[in-house]
Image 1 (cartoon, one colour):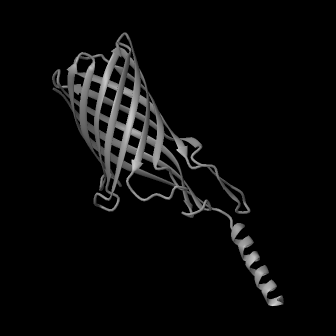
Image 2 (cartoon, helix red, strand yellow; image 1 turned 90 degrees about the horizontal axis):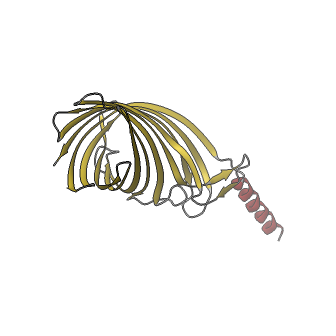
Image 3 (cartoon, one colour; image 1 turned 180 degrees about the vertical axis):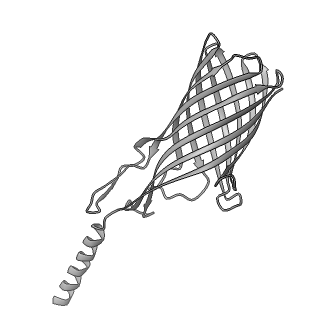
Length: 261
């Protein structure tokens, strides 16, 4: 009986030690120079209603690696001269290991308000998007459908029949991140997908050049300041082991060709 009691106490002590193991926190920061090349076709179905499609190649690791292919199939409707709405579907394939190894599917809805003053054009766009990665997820680490809100303010200057420079700032908020709390003793609490935070600030400047009424070329430079929380937890029960706090600084050079049917 004494041996059984001793063994039970040892098991209880081991369980307490495991419960009190602190959560490991890792902070890292990286930077990169990236590139984007895209082509878009736009078809005016009838007055105010457009259908468009595009394909974009994205490079990272200082232009040395193909990051992803980002497709777009969408439709927009101009409600009046100050308001436009749009709906998009994005098939996205990532090349993390040098080949097409992960697919994502995204649906986005946006509403854009426009205002023109003299030769300046102002626009404010609010876009909500949900993205599904087609892999086997740990539900305690990320949701099946990731939701985000993107808010963009853009100013362009229409001073020439062919040239139109612009600048924009965009904020992106992650709306349904896993909500974990923990303390120094290693006690963790999982609160579902109720955490929300701003995970990217984007500044962009560029110029559009019109070869003709139907052919345009866009050249731009874009800076992203990103922040992300990544969790490592047990799969079958909500026990948090490690938290990564990622900060990224990314400079992107882009080129896009646009054609109207």
